[in-house]
Length: 209
Image 1: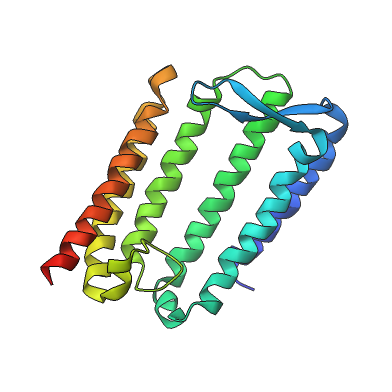
Image 2: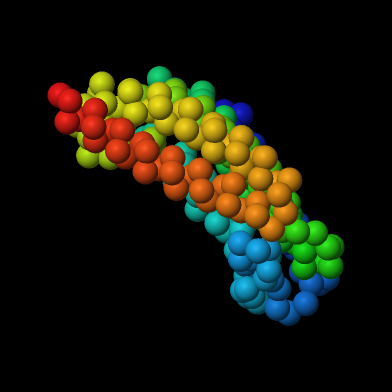
């Protein structure tokens, strides 16, 4: 068993341990969703508020580790396996951080959720950019558009652009953490522009050839 799988199992076990520990300490209804202004706009029962994330981690990790085995181009995924597994570690840390923030909020800690979560998003998107830059042509991981999947040259060019786009999104998101109630827009705006840019870029590259 490799290090990424061992780490994922430990994270899942820790998350279940945390859920069991905090179960007697939280109210019957817990905050579970926040809007862009950092205000609570969704609640769920204590059970699902604590155990949804550990269960989701099991499902997501199974999907992430099974993907390289079922992809028709799994031999290409092997070429960036190390980067992919590093991303799985980052993904688990990201989800765990969000989980701990949610518990802290429901335990009465006062902080701006939007601002607190942005550094995690920044790191996540930066590492996503690193993964995208390394990704070889496959059907499961990367920027999967009709044009990238029809041409290896298009795939490589789009993913090289995608690496820079996602890393810029990560940097902008981190900067946004210093802008209070406007912080979310430093994530949403570059993400939207970046996605549109990559789709258009990939299509124009396709039209050239």
